[in-house]
Amino acid sequence: MIGTNQTSPQRFPAAIALSTLLAACGGGGGGGGNARPTIVTAAFAGSGAPLAGDTLLLTFSETVELVGGTLLTDADLVLSGGASLGTVTQPPTLASSNTVSITLGSGVSFTPNSTTVALGAGNDCVRDASGQLGNGGTAIVIGTSDGSAPSIANVTIAGVDDALNGTGAAGGTLQVPANGWTVDLAYSDNTAVDTGSIRISASVTVSTSSGSQPPGTNLVPFLTQVSATSSAASFRVPSTVSFPAGAITLSCLVNDVSGLGSTPSTFTATVLPFNDARRPFETTTNASQVWYLDFSRDVEGYTTGLLTGGALVSTSGGANGTADFDELLRILGLTSASPIPNVQGGLNSNQVATARFKDELLDALEEFYVGANVTFTLTQPSGSFGTSASLAYNAIGYSQIAIAGAPTSAGQLGVAIFDPNNPTQNDDTKTDFSGLRLGVFLFTIVKSGFEPPSTTRFRQTFGTFAPALGGVAIGNDTQDGQRLADTLNDARATEIDAAIADFARFTAVVTAHECGHSMGLVQNGAMPLGLYGNDTTNFPGSSDGHIRNTALFPAGSTNIMSPSLGYSTALGASTGFNTLNLAYLREQATYGN
Image 1 (cartoon, rainbow, N blue to C red):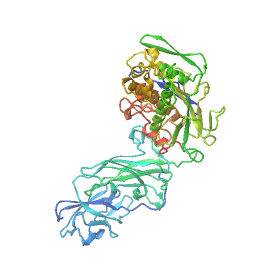
Image 2: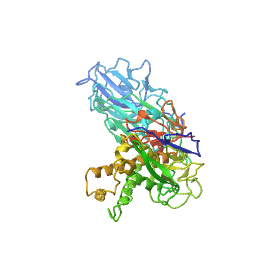
Image 3: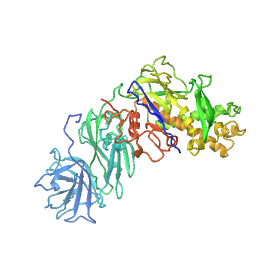
Image 4: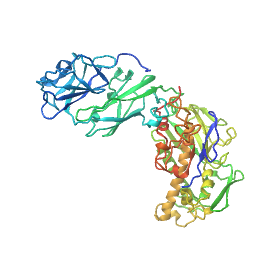
């Protein structure tokens, strides 16, 4: 819920409300041993032809150790074209946790940017942390070092911010299903990263279409590349790849075009495969989660009165034959008591303005839920909830929510059923759910918006149109029909467009918030059991079933699942779900056990 007066809602099966701010403008998987370390990139650190005393840098697929008392020589390697490191006399050293430095000996002979190198069967010098000696691997061209190895700045899953992925102060461990999520890397280099040689491996055996891949295997050939640029890359785990249940650690490496490699960067998560009860939008019965937006509620009327510096909006009486939503549009001045007929396609000005509002609302909801298997409709699907507030997910093909007028408790912008992991379809149109009205309450923002001061964004937008504020309603200016039909583009036309778009977007934010509750947002506690709801220590301003992430959004924007909402911040260009909430909605992260 969001509102001026927040309640302390019970947990499911209860409702959660949103208020308005009155501010001015172990590893699972076993099976098989780890993959042996291999060379993933190589670079000659010198200029011209290699000479005795120059350095060759070999970067390995994982952290390695050097066996004491051994040298790394031609006998340990496979060099192309009869190349040689010369008579090596100095023991190798570790330039980093996974890069070995070799001082070349007399008689050295190879051609940078042409000669290839791989570990040979005779390697007795380089081993991994478990004691396995490296062997084999793809032959790698020896490049010429540019003097600066690339570095990985960040690794995460599903684009989840560090504050929410278990690596931040809030703690926890990100939990993901067996597949469907992305591995996301951010990196840098002084020249250029070789995006074709990015390497991702896991600490567990991973099932693929080509069979089980042991720990340490490069999984990139089995993943789907989403993007790969000079600074970031993303790879999706497709349905043909499955991680086992339990703890996993991913290890990532990048190489630059000169042959230098990064140190490994790791990310720890836990895997909990989906079942129908845990998966938010299981598709066995329904192709997607459908939400029907119901604008028909009629339980009261509204009046306006005098108020110093503004206007007073109040509820009045009971049902009067006009939908509460339509009455509020009239008070805002988005529609008129005397609409202009035949504006567009036989529709009058009220019908055109309302249709535009609903189109803008659907567009904004689509934007907020991008990538999630969720759709919104203005047409009621078949089936009925009857007297039930919730039905089994497979018993009906949709959930529904009312876009309506006033709440039960003053200050609430919305109230909805909280449904962890979304195992049911929910009816958020009920007018008596344990004594509460459910739905989106536009009366709250209209009432508060009409109050002083007059400098708020709301007043600046709707003062032009609301009759109670001295405005001229859309349809009361004889040229408004042309403006709605886009045949007259003047200053008032711009103001009309902005008013309709802004109010639709605000409504979309509240609707997205309430529908989010009824699809499982925001479970209290840290991952893997929750989504950090009610963590007031690490996310100040959070509350039961909500999370405020001020630090993760630019000024003027907010997380949709915040416990309270201001009109201006709802319209912020970056307002949306936080990255963990969005990963959950996209079924790339899951909570519970």
